[in-house]
Image (tube, rainbow, N blue to C red; front, side, top):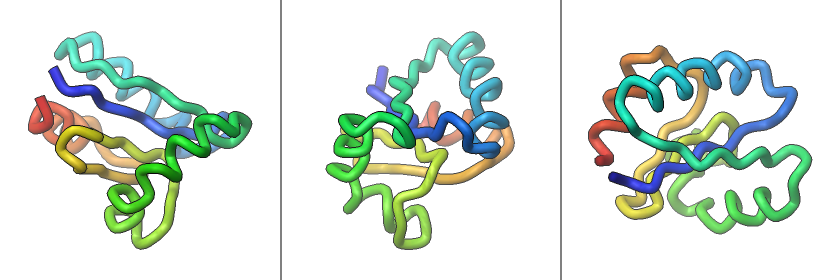
Length: 94
């Protein structure tokens, strides 16, 4: 199973809408995301910045949240999306 990361902001409205979809995906498929809050956690900010070459091109050239990353395949998706799109991306990574 792939090691998937989710970068999010505590007060980010898009992140808040994605969290139940991530939890549903974890329950239904067994896929797991390591969740990293970046708005208030400097270590997590540094971690996200370390993946900037992978994440930024998928996010319009910037680091944005929510961002989902597979560091093993160097693939990422960004922003609010529907459940099926997130599920398709996550399952493609495993």
